[in-house]
Image (cartoon, rainbow, N blue to C red; front, side):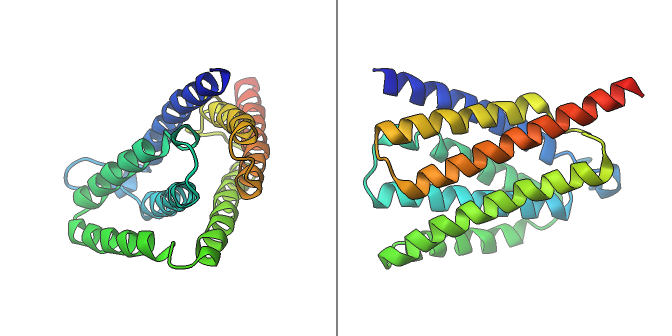
Amino acid sequence: MIRLALCLISCLISLTARATLTWSLSAPPKQYKSCEGVFVSLCAVTLFCISLFSFLVFLRYQIYYGYPLETYLEYPIIIAQDVILLFCIMHFSGKAKRALFYAVVFWVGWYMLTLQKWIIDLAMNLCTFVSAASKLVQLQHLWQTKDSGQASALTWGMSAYTCATRIITTVMTTNDLAVLIRFIIMLILNIWVTATILQYSKTKKTD
């Protein structure tokens, strides 16, 4: 019962944090304004593709090993959310045809991941590396600009809390080392980003 409650809380917080982060990423600078009045940037598309691939790998990994639904309950919803938003970005930037290419790539990748056990295991480790690298890029951007900008400490804080609860639920259910390593690394980096945002937000208010 406690495990299920933790999983549900983690799912709700993860979805809320992801929705907030997605909104901030989909609002790039005004110089990328399209004819429809929607701001689009190559950076946003790249981030969404990397993020979507990471979530797909994690979901496929969980399904491949037959883990309980509560260990990945929020991921199908997050993936659907990212797919819809990515299509909207491509559509309003006049590159809707390219969305079909991405769909084919992701579909082929989904099935290729489980051709061999070592492929899905390697993909899971690479997924952790890519996710960590994206957060380090965010940290580097904060250090360079010394400005939190649109980044929300609350959003990153919720992401850190989600990782912490996922560590607990993973230990209580599958005890998978690769998954544990992923969430521990993500927890550390999310806390680091949150602290950095708070630091620069305080500096900005002081100035």
